[in-house]
Image (cartoon, rainbow, N blue to C red):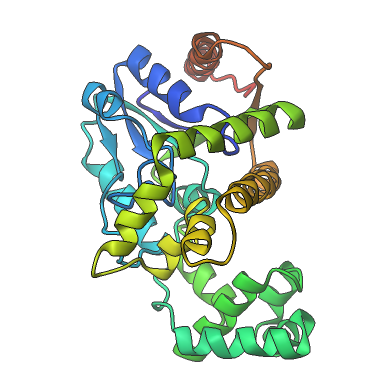
Length: 319
């Protein structure tokens, strides 16, 4: 398995954290996190962070690496992940586990070092979108970077704004910068296994996960984060589960309403995740049945890895 780096992904609440842990145990390996919220210290319950016992048993990387009031970018993650991969013992096995599509894309393709967020520019563009519509802002991007504009739907406002922001800060099109950065030949061979579940099963698991978070003390965790003099960064405040509880604590909604919003927003996010995963090339899909034991699913993954490894030694690739 050392010749190929395996990425285990799937939508929120698909069980990838526990499955990845079991796989790492079986291969006597380590785990590199590819989750955009596990990076924050103190944000444990709402992110369903691996337990301390799991992390003591199996080394986990890129978890709890920044404070919740600090900013962190996909580009920085790609560099950090590359550093971890390069520094790990080449004789050791490891699996990359997480459900943040941009982080996974960053690991595979790399991300150019773009400028830090400029909130003045973002607020101006957000205001324009509110007043004149998303299509108007998309039209601005069309004029300065038609290549990127063609790839983005007018309602993909976050990425449209980022592309305009990059141009304003660097005077270069983000499509050009991506092309300059992308390596012609990667030093690693990545293979993706994506856990898929039927929509109804996925939604039930999401609802159960949200209920469990509240039982474990999500509201108190958010209170503690807000009480810190440093507060929360914009990114951390927008994390699923946290932004809704913040709204509740600020008097904008009841606790019950916050809980239902988390469930709804998480379902929507899981749908977007699946769209992303379907766009990745050479994904090996693993259908997890409702009620299927995690050990059984983990064993299926191990068998896929072993089968692929044998085929590689024979010069065959049916992955």
